[in-house]
Amino acid sequence: MIQGNAGCNTFSGAIDRGDDGSLALGNLVQTEMACEYLDFEIDYTAALLRVDRWEATPDELAFVTDGV
Image 1: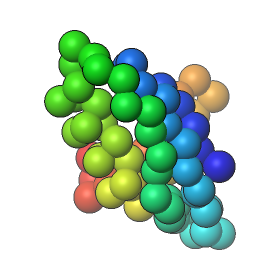
Image 2 (image 1 turned 180 degrees about the horizontal axis):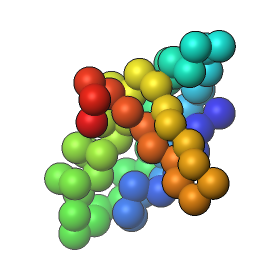
Image 3 (image 1 turned 30 degrees about the vertical axis):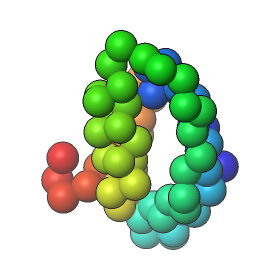
Image 4 (image 1 turned 60 degrees about the vertical axis):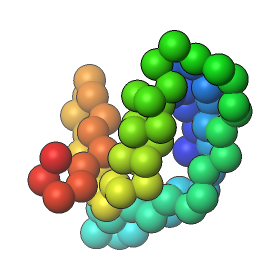
């Protein structure tokens, strides 16, 4: 399961990790509170759904898609 906070609203959903480091996220559910930066939250959660792999260091976890 993946869960987090997009700045104001919280979200959660299914996540599967392949042996090759690939990621597959299922549909996300998210609270719908009115927020000052709602456009950012919409873009952020949409970007999460495009993630295809992850990279980790001891200090950071990065979700990556198309080299970004």
